[in-house]
Image 1 (cartoon, rainbow, N blue to C red):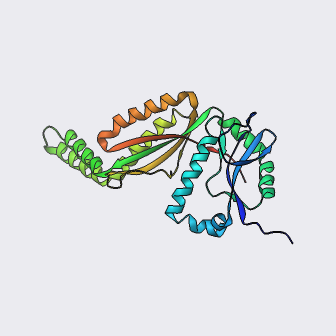
Image 2: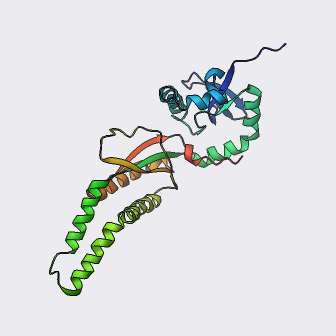
Image 3: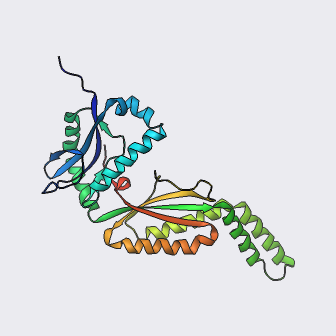
Length: 257
């Protein structure tokens, strides 16, 4: 009678296998040709499909395990490209995990080649709604200087009503312009969600848009400079940007099931 295992296997990522295994990680791995799939043996009591669904709604449990997961992922991503798996990707047996790895081996190779010498960065856009409204009002006042008589008066009043009624339209236009300028300087840009902490909940600045970008590693300073320039340009409007990373390329993996 075979013994029933109380364990399953939490996947981390796939990367080139180092010629001298010096990677500072406690993770185990499966090697297939030139690549290795890194995983951790975990308890079914926490990571079975049913229990994982429950635990993902337990903020204390989730925070603890996400922090541990990201620490290991940083190690995997520190020297060479890693193809990361999202937290909670679990296999119930080594054999099934190995079959998956070999089946998608060519796809992993293609992704690693595409991502070679590239980095993923996160750009979060924050808004102070009250400051944005004050900026719109000042724009109206600036445009309304001079004599308010005749047709010019009614034209300005119409513009004032349009600006106040189309606050979201104005905001979306500015955010679209920011995205277009960033997109010109990177390889790919996607709108994404981030798990990162957004800081003080009492702050008037609230996240309104998350972007993931992938770009050549040697252009890192160009991206930093661009974000600084955009912050200076839009800060008076109540719009600020925060750059984070580099991250494992979660948002730019191309694996078709």
